[in-house]
Amino acid sequence: PGEPAWLRQVHSARVVEIGCEPNPEADAAYTRQTGSVCAVLTADCLPVLFCDRAGSVVAAAHAGWRGLAGGVLEATVAAMQVPPGEVLAWMGAAIGPQAFEVGDEVREAFASQHPEASEAFVPQPTPGKWLADIYRLARIRLAHAGVQAIYGGGRCTYEEAESFYSYRRDGVTGRMAALIWIE
Image 1 (cartoon, rainbow, N blue to C red):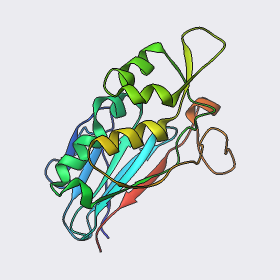
Image 2: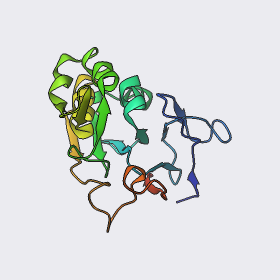
Image 3: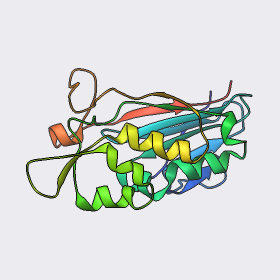
């Protein structure tokens, strides 16, 4: 494949087509071009890779809680311009449900859009604090977008220090890349 097309990630729901603008500010990219590499960088946020069953389009999305609540996964599926039932999604390593502490505003951002998202939050002893399951939240949003084939998830960047970077764990971190292309 060619060199990865790096994005200036800003925790948005913006999706770009690879090669259509230089140095794009976005959190997801897609392509139909052979050898063009979609790439996202993460440390605790959720990387999601997509393809269609025919192998005609691929995409990569960076889904932190803001982008996830803002619709980055749904926007990526829409940008692929194939029936959602033909889309396969794979979730890479992200902060796990035992380590991802958030406030009331995060829970409300998800529950206000999809009431079943409330089940992805476990209350903590400190009032207004919750443990969030980003994998479950992503599955809910993908299902609402019509995606049925959802794989991966379950690895924790925070708890698996020997395998992954975690900004929340270390305060200073590197990044991991998730890449996808059509051969």
